[in-house]
Length: 467
Ligand code: FCB
Image (cartoon, rainbow, N blue to C red; front, side):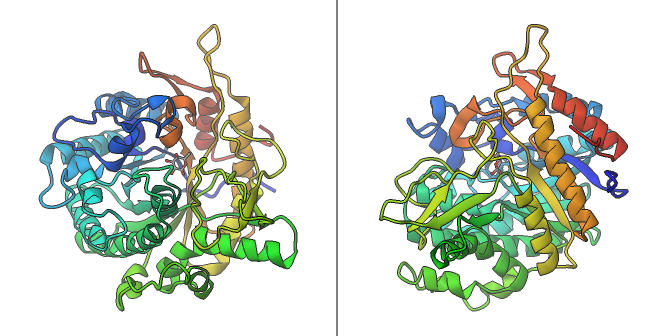
């Protein structure tokens, strides 16, 4: 099989606002739920916060130059909602919008395509104080915000994504509580899931009406590659339940305008879903131009044999389950090598997801909007960061993408997570996903060997036969 990718394939890198920008209190920005959460003792490893992060707000011109040096063709970044609309409602703050306009202009000046994500988990704190994602109004506020950003950037950005990984916002934010805002209420988590779906649909509609016809609108999901430990009926039922909660709760309404009936049955004990109004599903199924898939690792499940299933599901330790209605499911460490997150390295999960969505929505182009790995990278005595494990990870996953394309999947691009080391949510700065190393005290950027390797792949459009 050839290792050459189709012409026009996008070679990208991704980041998110709270993880890199810093400048948390500058130019009118107000706290988001992640500012509040990270400043709450005990929530983030090492007491780390995104106050300074990689200081990208001040260093974006250098960072764009670095991307250009590395041959990055497309850059996926997110907009900090509370930087452009500090109260989450009402008029935009010009200085906030100016930052993103300057960033986009800088990208264009270097021949890099900007890809905007409107929401990467940083809800303005004011909206959380008014009830957050469990409340319907938050979806309407999101649509208003989407329109403001579209008005400001619509003339210079073609590819837009609404939400990043709404599963994490709903179930880690309101279920297990390991992400902001840190609530642990299964019903709130399910309500949040619906209102995130609604926000996506209304947001897509707001984008469509504000943007020129050439604009393309997508969403970034983290569908689960869920495997049953055995083929026993109990284990297969555990797989079905987790698949419903991880994936179909978002993809079914967004792509098909319905909630899965098995999900409604599994959660009936908790909620009657009466917060789904008549017209919601039609709004959520707004036509999309691409589906973004974020993938890191597969998940292995079985039926739990007692009432206290192990919580080792790769999403942080909590007494509270992020899987409402599927509490009696046990999670198992898949075999094989793991990254510094303890996530198993297994590209077959990515292959399965690409083929699944190719079959489910054959006309919808796919993008891998995140994929990558954390390792314990350190500069050596010469200041060089060698990260052969990351190169092997990227090679294996890109080979899988190429195989999925050969098998008929319409994959248009790949965004490495992440351009540079950053604030890894509840893990703080302890986990490094970057292709570029960041020395936080000095903010020195050092491309790791994986960055050079990726640059060569992007330049040639071809994967070397081995890592
Ligand atoms: C994804 C997030 C991204 C980053 C990676 C490692 O779930 O979207 O911000 O944290 O995981």
